[in-house]
Length: 188
Length: 188
DNA sequence: ACGCACATGTAATCAGTTACATGATTCT
DNA sequence: AGAATCATGTAACTGATTACATGTGCGT
Image (cartoon, rainbow over all chains, first blue to last red; front, top):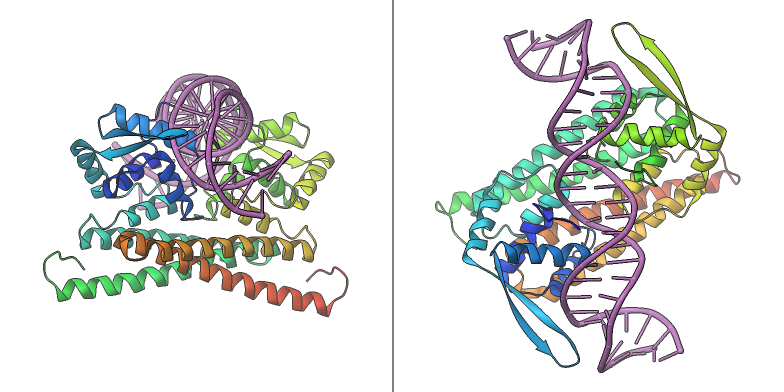
């Protein structure tokens, strides 16, 4: 039955609706367009989530009839919805779900001030750094007795982590430079 | 209750046992050492999986008593287990679960012949390439109207995909060079 | 003709986490 | 004193997928 509690997508979907009113179908299409970044949820996730948001008065629906096909149900965020969303965005990051949560926050990042974004990237950076350290340690501990496959996997993990770290550090450098240039929170 | 059917970890755990007999606790420690590469499953996943493997006669247990603490239960793969494992490794790749499935296959890669490994890396490469294309398309379609957050996310995704692609292509180049040098399937 | 895009929804099922239960030993 | 490591296990809960149900219009 799925009693949608606080699923990962719940707040993300809310965030998408904050930017633009959409139907469930639209939401799915949008997520699809992000490829592997977020695992695109199926309708079995999206529709019930929308119903739950509606139930909680965080969104409203407008039924748009169409000739010869089911009516579109366009969802719009409410004031309460915006409140809930901002609370979520402000929150220190769910962290647990790792990559996906990170990307979702990233996509919705414009709302949060520049330093919120910086904090978010910085948290991710320290997570990835930890990961990198963990892998390096594993490589060291296993030493000779590691199988070729294990070695490959470690090598892969280290390479990916390094790549992500340099991207993050690069972005962070740019962002703090911009922040220095303009004292207050300013838009681009 | 969890009627462990064909969970992702089922075959991976089997693969680990093929390399070395271990207890559930050991398995968990091993997975932990890989940091974010595989989301380390909890005991609530590991123990039931082990019980299921036992039930299916793919592994056997040896109970090793210890003074002042619960006995270790060391699991060892059976002939049937090895059969099942090889069937899984040979299979075209579950693909669906993406990254994790890829890494798991990678770790167990030594068993498969060199060209099996190449095929595996190559599949991943085409997946990541598709993903890259999808993202690039999204960026183009959204154009001006994309929010800064969306742009950032796309940029991030493209950077990660590119990094992964170059790693994969690099590895593939090395591997096929080695393969050419030694006609038959040979070990390093 | 067949499948895909459009468009919504529900129920069954699976997979995994969290929390609980138990208990000694070693590090901080 | 309190936390972490060692060591196993179960039950309740949550989150998400898969498969089903329904139906038109368009492209190949």
